[in-house]
Image (cartoon, rainbow, N blue to C red; front, side, top):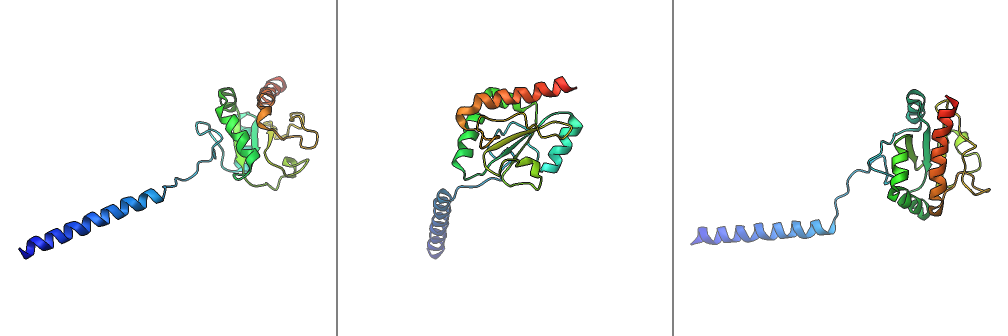
Length: 167
């Protein structure tokens, strides 16, 4: 009888521990490591560092598309949402060396008119910043808003066409 009581007590302790672990697991959601895409398109190949992106642009003979953004910026989040939802933008992005930065680089060519976000710039394989590919705002030349997605797509085409024309 005593063995039976010990068995029941151990069984109850095991069930209680199991329930406590399950209950605790509902409170904490498991966080997975963030990919280099940072939500801008997980199916796309994103480069980790600016220096590597420059090297890839040169060696692959593809233009580089740099997206400057901040994770907690509502404007960056809104642009990211429309960019990811656009099949055309995602398909075109495959033709670029891609990097998205949540920090500023020491390259002053990447902030010719300020360090605002979101800011999207294009660099050709000769490592020239394409100052001729801009958004529509005179005070933030490389800024895009969600409503500017068509202009961004047009500028992506322009970056690719300029590359072909200059070859």
